[in-house]
Structures are given as C-alpha cells and as structure tokens.
Image: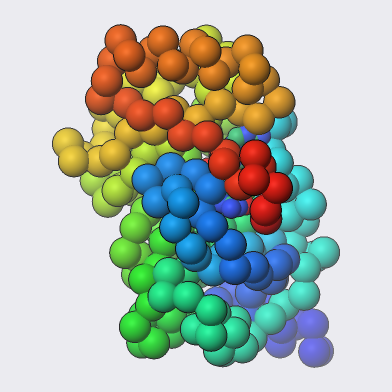
Length: 210
Ligand SMILES: C[S@@+](CC[C@H](N)C(=O)[O-])C[C@H]1O[C@@H](n2cnc3c(N)ncnc32)[C@H](O)[C@@H]1O
Ligand SMILES: Nc1nc2[nH]cc(C(=O)O)c2c(=O)[nH]1
Ligand code: SF4
Ligand SMILES: [Mg+2]
C-alpha cells in the first residue's frame, strides 16, 4: 500500500529518486567554470556503454525524496541549479522546476532528450545519443548541444544533430573521458576546421571536484 502510494507520487513528480546533490563548479559546456548546485536524479535506460554514472541507472537504488525538501536544500546554496541524472526526463520535471522557479532560481538541465520534455527551464543542454535519439520536439528549445566524441563517426553524428537545433544554439564537442588522449587532438583539429564548434572538456575531472 505504502509502496503503491510512493510510486504514484513519483509518477506525478511529487517525489523523485534522488541520487545525490552537490554544490560545485559546472565542469562542462557553455557555463564551464561557474558555481552551480547539482541535483542528480536516478533512473536512465538509455544505456551508453561509456556512461560515467552507471550507478544512477537503477531508480530503485535511490530513495524517493519529496521535491519540497530538494527545493529547500537547493536554495541555500546557489542561484543556479543544474538538474542531471541519470536521465531527468525519465520523470515529470514540472513540479520540481516550478518549485525552484518560484524561489527565483535559474534552472539548467543536462539531458539526452530521449523522453518527453517536461518542466520549465532557463537553459537546456542536449547531449544526444545515437542509441536512443532525442524526441524531435526538443531541438528548437535547445540552448546548448554537447556531443560526446568517442570515435570518428561521432563527428558525422554531431553535424546531423547540429542541423536540427536553432541557429543560435551553442555547439560543443566533448571527448569521451576514457579515450580523451586519442580523441582530444582530433577534436582540436575539427574545431579549427569548423569553428562553429567549441571544445568542451570535463574540467571537474581535471580539478578533482565532483
Ligand atoms: C551523466 S549524463 C546525465 C544527463 C543525461 N542523461 C545526458 O546524458 O545528457 C551528463 C553529461 O555527461 C556526459 N557524459 C557521460 N559520460 C561521459 C563520459 N564518459 N565522457 C564524457 N562525457 C560523458 C553526458 O553525455 C552528458 O552530457
Ligand atoms: N562539475 C560537474 N559538472 C558537470 N556538468 C555536467 C555534469 C553531469 O554529470 O551532468 C557534471 C558533473 O557531474 N560535475
Ligand atoms: S543518457 Fe546520460 S545517464 Fe543515461 S547512460 Fe547515457 S550518459 Fe549515462
Ligand atoms: Mg558528470
């Protein structure tokens, strides 16, 4: 009975499986170097073989948490909140983001875009995945496209994705961490040849911060 109730609350986005929350520096993409409070929601079935937070995938491993308490915590730390996962769009993000917005916070999302877009967002970072493509509705809303480069074929994928976002979308290529020594020089060369792109490094990993 209690479990059924909790499931219902999670389905409505009143509770969410919370993996971790931390105040740090945005390590990637357009806002690199700026302070932000991260909320990592569990649950993802996209299945990227190189995913750097596989512990997030199973939502059962993360306690269903009242969004009210997530919001109360978040507002103590920062004006900028990054919602990530897991795949946050696995869940209905409406109530969490509306609650954060009501406190005057800027809300960013890190998403693969593979599920329905819910929530109110000040900044949408789309990191599309070949194995589960973004829903088409997200492309016109994306502020930042961040394509992970694991091998050469990902440059072609990056261009196909860039063709679908709006003209003023910021474009980033980010080396997959385990192959960074091999792929980073290729990204550098690519960006010099096609300067509409920028390179994004996972700077938090170099800095040894969360
Ligand atoms: C862990 S994901 C969570 C949010 C969402 N599921 C997504 O993929 O966008 C956060 C960001 O880390 C990137 N990422 C995950 N594993 C990575 C890796 N091994 N190397 C580089 N970037 C990685 C993702 O592409 C995404 O941009
Ligand atoms: N510092 C820091 N910056 C990040 N930007 C995106 C991250 C993510 O995992 O979504 C991330 C993260 O895990 N840490
Ligand atoms: S979509 Fe994001 S969280 Fe899910 S497996 Fe891929 S990188 Fe990991
Ligand atoms: Mg990360």
